[in-house]
Image (tube, rainbow, N blue to C red):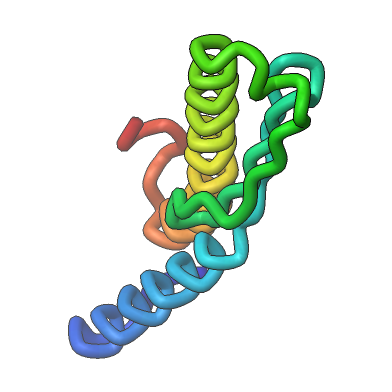
Length: 107
C-alpha cells in the first residue's frame, strides 16, 4: 500500500492499514506441542489459549505436566509473534516502498 494524497487522506490510509493488520492478527491460529505430543496448545493471534489437549499419561507427574504446559504455551506465543511479525513486515514493506525510502532504513 502506498500512502499518498493530503495529510488527511494519508491518515485515513494509515488507519485502514491498522485495521487490516488487526484483522490479519485476529486470523492467526497456531498450535504447539511438547512432550512428544502429550500436551498440545492452540492459540489465537491475541495470544488467547483457545484449546488444550493433555494426554492422560501426562497427568501422572504433575511437575512434568506443568513444565509441558508452560513449554507449549510459550512456544505457541513465540509462533504468534513470528506470524504477526511476518504480516507486519509484508505490510510495512509495501508502505516503505511507497514512501520511497531505501530498504532497511527503519530497522
